[in-house]
Image 1: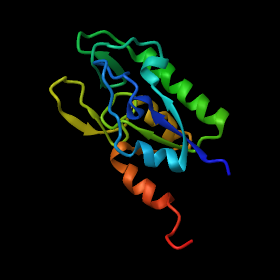
Image 2: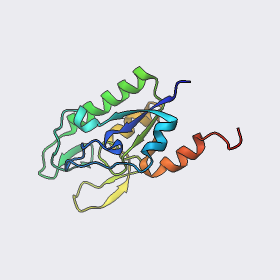
Image 3: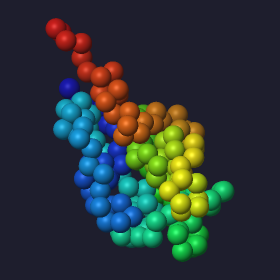
Image 4: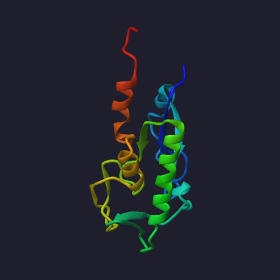
Length: 154
C-alpha cells in the first residue's frame, strides 16, 4: 500500500538548512516515516537563499534580514515552489517549522529582531493554508500521529 505523501520542512528531517547552518531534527522522524512518505522541502533554500544566511523576520508585508535587506522575493518564490510540489504530488498535508518567517504555522517573530513572537503564519504556511493544504507545526506532530495510527487490535 502506498503511504500518503506529506510535505515537511527539511530542517525537521535533519537537513542543515536553518539560517545558522543547523537543523531542527524532529524526535518523531522515525514514526513519521512509518506512516507517511516524507517530502522534505526548505522554501528559503529552494527560493534562492544560501545557508548559512542572515536571520530574517516578517515586517509588515515584507521579509527583511537583520541587516535590513528585503528578501521577500526569495520567500515568495520558495512558497510558490512548495505549493507547486504539493499540487504536483497530490499532497494535502504539511508539517512546518513553527516561528519561521517561511514556515511558521501559528507564530512568527514580530520583525523587531528582539526574540518577540506574534500570532501569524509564515509566507509558505500562509500560501499552503490559502490553497487548502492542512498545515501542522512540529509541536502538533504527536497529535497528528495519534490521529493517523490504526486503532489497536486491528
